[in-house]
Image (tube, rainbow, N blue to C red; front, side, top):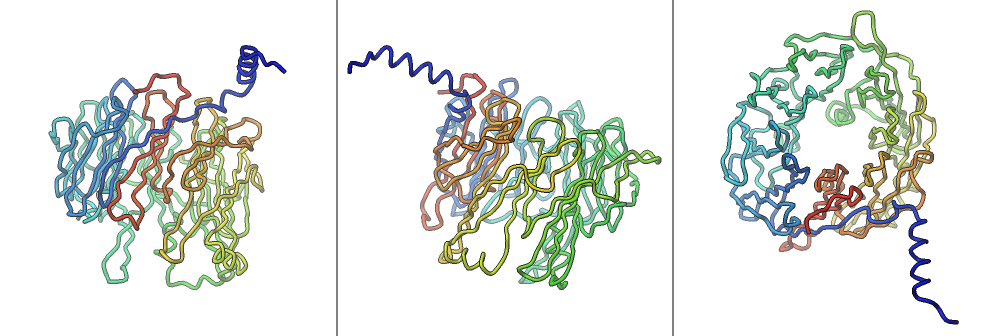
Amino acid sequence: MVINLNKLTGLFSVLLALLPTSVFGFYDVVEVVSGKAMSQTVLSMQRQGSGMADLAVISVAKDGSRKIELYVADSNYQTPKIERPLADDVIFVDSGKYGNEEVLLLFSARQARIININTGFELPVIEFSSIYNSPLYDSVPQINVFKDLNNDGLDDFLIPTFEGYLVSVQLDSGDFSKPQLIPAPPLMDMSYNNHPWYQAVNLFLVDMTLDGKADICFWKQGDFIVYPQLDNGSFQTSAVTLTSEVAFDLDGIDGISVRMQDEDQSDRLTTVLHELRDLNGDGITDILTQSIRSKGVFNKKTTVAFHRGFAGDNGFVRFDPMASSVIQSKGFQYEMRSRDLNSNGEVDILISSVEIGVTKIIGALLTNSVKIDLGFYEMKQGAYPKTADHVREITAKFSLSTGEFWYPFVHVVDANGDGLDDLLVQEGDDQVLVFVGDSDKLFDKKPIKISAPMPKDPDLVSINMLNGDSIEDVVLKIPPDISDSDGSHRIILLLSNRGGVLRPN
């Protein structure tokens, strides 16, 4: 049999054209070797006008020395363009929008400074005191205190102190408003060696006054303490107290270990406020609660309840004490995220849950792994389903010999720029699975496989826009293994190539 090569090539081209375009080329994989260090913090900063982002890498060496390195998009992030020492007084860092550009900020115990990495010049922008008052010996973390509070496109300061939150709004002139104290003392606990430990109380930025502007809100013993946003973007100095008609015990999962550590959990129902947000797209803030019913170590049930918000006669939002949707599952739902997956204006829910039992524990010990269910609940016409629309199982692994725990990362992003969210699930230490978003069935059943080195901690994964195509990219930070004391850190970039924008070589 004689095969005509030209005909075969033409047939192959036709077959390629018939396949969905989403099957090919979601990401270009770029690997950056960022050097030896005890720890590294990676931040991205978009350049004005281009949409391209550079990477600032803050490293702490074994001898305690600290430095900033700038990896630029123009050189495909391969070698640092600039290296500068980092001052000893820097406790943490952050990046954000200052005027028309993104900048790197250095925070000491008393001051925030913007650093121009190219020149080394540091511009003090605000004086303060906070609960962060001493540098760590082995790392310089990123803490998100520079964020847009009033939706004007400029980032503002929101810094937790021992008395509450300090708020300073960025003005059009480039200056910042006089810092305003919002009273809300942090949670306090004692560590095992009697050292004090502090955690800022949960702060919600939501519209409680029905005027379309985000207000500062706290929950305190059954009441919402609200500081309304003013027309100039600052916040009212006096608080408005609104009684919550939805009953819950705590204002977040994080508070359980601090506030209930000495209580008997053998037969108890605990309900926490998980989120204040407009969930059904009607422009009014709603409530999402999470309840944990515990009847012993191996008998737990979690319930998620959606309470609609409505306009009260007093000009503030009120919440229906009766839940309009309830989601229940066996086991423990240890993580819950919310996002509009299908861009229909209604917020959907992703719940990670684990069933607990003697058989499950024995199986985990034998296999050194734990099965985790990811359940996706789509809101439809203002209500959530009782059972998940889409369920995917992932596996977390651990080592009894080293104590290491490996949990695969899961992110929901619009990876191909089609307006629908896609599901990214880590598979092992060298692959990520991309389940393409579908308007009818939420995600495709068959994934696209992207080969790239993967981290062992989901906290080492972040989503940023790096290459100027307005599509979300993925940044993976991979430190050396514990056994490799002399190894180098790596940064893996998954750069979207669906936007048609020419990237650097």
